[in-house]
Image (tube, rainbow, N blue to C red; front, side):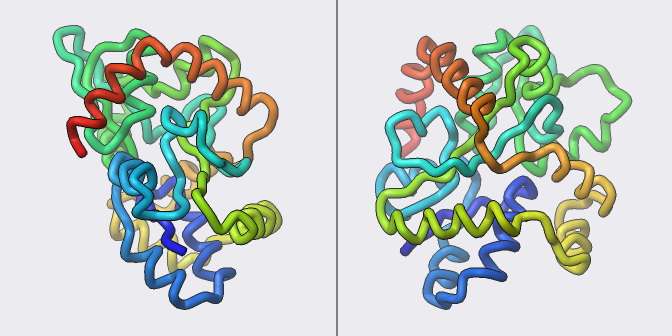
Length: 232
């Protein structure tokens, strides 16, 4: 089974869980090899180069997905738009967040993931950026689903992973937090605070938020899809 692996901090609890719970060494070997930013993992999954991955929600409508996702209720810190009325610049590593900016009618430069966290930390007292998840919640009072764990095959294994992660998803050893701190340039408290903003389980409000986003995004998705195809 080939698993796509996103290296951003938002999936750190899931990565730690897999390393602790999945005993199949071949699975570990493949999952560590097939890594990348969200747009690269989307492409690998949609072209069936990987069997399972967290897929950007903009692509998830007709896929086989679990109830695991990357979800925020309000501020998320890692999906920003740097305000500029004169430019509209997408983040090449993103797809859902680029469309979210359009749905929310925000102009500027989209920035996601660990780079967004670093930018926010360095500019925390600035008013030149907007947290898109926070803006979404202010407007619609619903969580925002950035990605969903989807799969092509090995459904039984994926469902087992989902069930086990629901039972054991919170503990991250201190040495891993320290390692991520050195890698990301964020201190341990900033990492812990950030992870507290993320939820991984889709409840009915999350599903309603996802449905609303996909409906609102339909006018923008055609353009997004064309751009996506051109980058393949």
